[in-house]
Amino acid sequence: MSVVGDNLNKIKASLPSGVTLVAVSKYHPNEDILAAYQEGQRIFGENLVQELKAKHESLPKDIEWHLIGHLQKNKVKYIAPFVSLIHSVDSLELLKTIDKYAAQNDRVIPVLLQLHVAEEETKFGLTLEECSALLRESAWKQLAHVSIQGIMGMASNTDCQEQIAAEFSRLRRFFESAKAEYFAECNEFSICSWGMSSDYLLAVQNGSNMVRVGSSIFGARDYSQKH
Ligand SMILES: *Cc1c(COP(=O)(O)O)cnc(C)c1O
Image 1: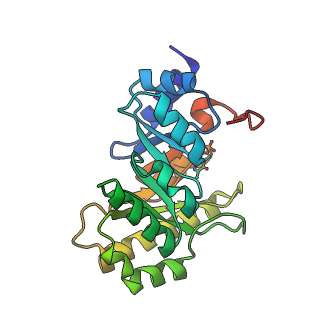
Image 2: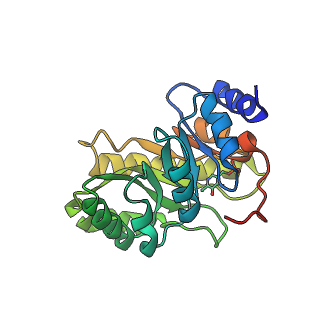
């Protein structure tokens, strides 16, 4: 078996049932994706729109592509025809733009609201207050072509396990309260996307049911490669 396939199977074996694995293939070539595909993996995550589009065009059509990176409004049109889940919605404006292009493609696009709970200022996402305000405003309820299906977040880049666990718990508590207040009748609102290579087991212990794992499957990324 390939190294990638072997890594993938080890990660899968470590996940409880009910946890979805998104294999984060950004900066990795198609052959690595196919090695994971060979082992049955069908959900892949990318964080650049152009790379996502190119890979979608050249790889098997039963792959479910997730966008996990920051999305600019002017790029939504490139992924609207096929994207399976957008993890990185961080404004009402973006939600409206996704709705518009989803409608043009005659589909409903599933999305997650990205929350910022990490200490780094560079990370994208809504603060809990901003996200509460967005949900309270209820303009999103008019958008028939987006389906808000849960919450996405990232923990701080730290070795402190307690801090990471505390940040994941905040995400989980926010998910629970949003569920109770706005999505009690909505079965689709069920996704808790947090946890990466370094912290996915801690994430699962703290309420995640969708982990986004890249380097532990595909190895280190080579950022000098052009895409
Ligand atoms: C790159 C990336 C990941 C995967 O990171 P690894 O540490 O390689 O597992 C997960 N989530 C997001 C948003 C990313 O950009």
